[in-house]
Amino acid sequence: MNLQPATLQRIDEVITHYPEKRSATLPLLHLIQEDLGYLPEDTETWVAEKLGLQPINVYEVVTFYPMFRRQPIGRRHIKVCRTLSCALLGGYKTCETFEREFNVKAGQTSADGEVTVEFVECLASCGTAPVVLINDDLHVKVDCAKAKQLSDQIKRDAAARR
Ligand code: FES
Image 1 (cartoon, rainbow, N blue to C red):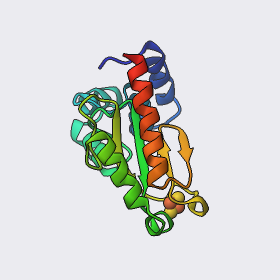
Image 2: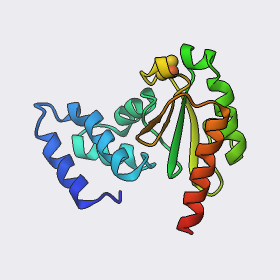
Image 3: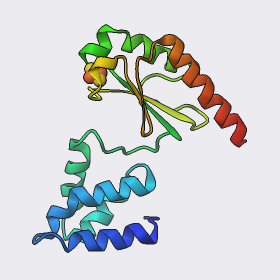
């Protein structure tokens, strides 16, 4: 597992916070995902060895929680809220715009690795629906026109990096 030295240090430190090593499973998984962007295939074995568990114990945790990703995601993670307020005010159309702009379906990553588009549940900004989170930036009242603007901006940024 190709983790940064700072992450490895943090992992060793976090384990000492728990009287039972196995209790550090969730924090370790979060640290690995924060570092790598997802949990690669060897995560279960690596964490199990660290904590004196069986890989199946770690696998059960990884597959239980939806916030853990087992596949790499795009440079921009576009999360479109689909809970009631957002759904009623056009969240599905907003998502369709992103899907069309980047030629993906919700849950997929674009071929160039630039974006992952995903539906999520309530982002706690229901009064400004439809709401979209792009990496750490919350965008409010994202109708189709605004989704198109955001997509254009992402494409411009991507082109500028090339
Ligand atoms: S329903 Fe979308 S932010 Fe709450």
